[in-house]
Length: 200
Image (cartoon, rainbow, N blue to C red; front, side, top):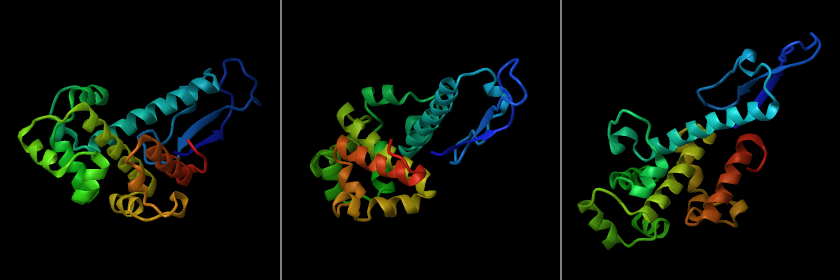
């Protein structure tokens, strides 16, 4: 996510008129495209960046939840969905079907990415929730998919990129690397670099 800072005049109380302040605008598709200067008045740069990144993190969690099926899977509810709590309880079984369909996974890819057999997955039809370990792997997939959709601006582009072999990954596809946390981190770093030119 790229943030641009525009000099617009003094922000600090009592600052001289030639003391530059700034306002931030986001170069991505997030719900805080532009924040007014008054919002940052008197704040140190670290506090400002923390607020922006905290809001981005919240938005990203919403994208992950939506990738897992959103309210249709998690239920209507009146409050926000706590993703950590859901993983610890075990995600709703339907979230597995949503991710598998979204990523167009073959049975062999499901075996590898979820580290469970076809026979085990068949038994999930009789369960309401998955176990926490499987839930954690599903969230990893959903996080990568959501980030790829944000960076590449469409679901179709995201899936195509995740399935395209890359020289950066020694000829492997990004999806192949998501089997492990280390691999997922490499894919995440690549997406961040594609978005704004630096590694996360």
